Image 1 (cartoon, rainbow, N blue to C red):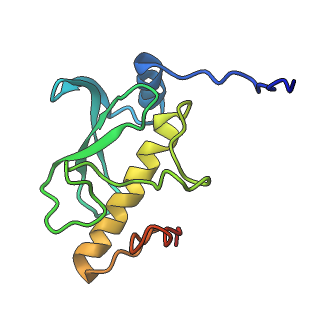
Image 2 (image 1 turned 135 degrees about the vertical axis):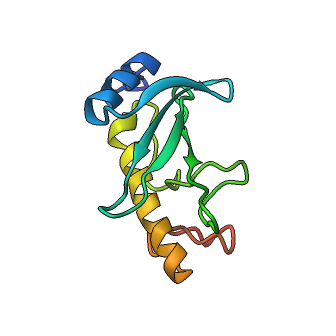
Length: 144
């Protein structure tokens, strides 16, 4: 009989710990209830001279948070889900994906800033210049 070897148990940060860590690195974020869910809202400016975007980060426990741009209106968009939340990462990319013990301030916020930067470039060029995954076929899902 083979014994299953378990690694160290990973601790999943709760809403309050995530909020504390978020406020340490990004003090502009405030806890709130957004559309009936625990969330934080704060402003992010992707580049000097860029607009400041008010974003809502919706807490979902160990699942990946969902990020919505509250204002300003984004205009033409790509890399968004039909529900309006941003597509920040590819779940199968081991280098950049959400894990249940991830820290929002060290993953989701930097990914959101990056997304906003590439969104602004997309507004000017109609070309997404950031990392993306092609979804042309089921077997053609590589990170570029």
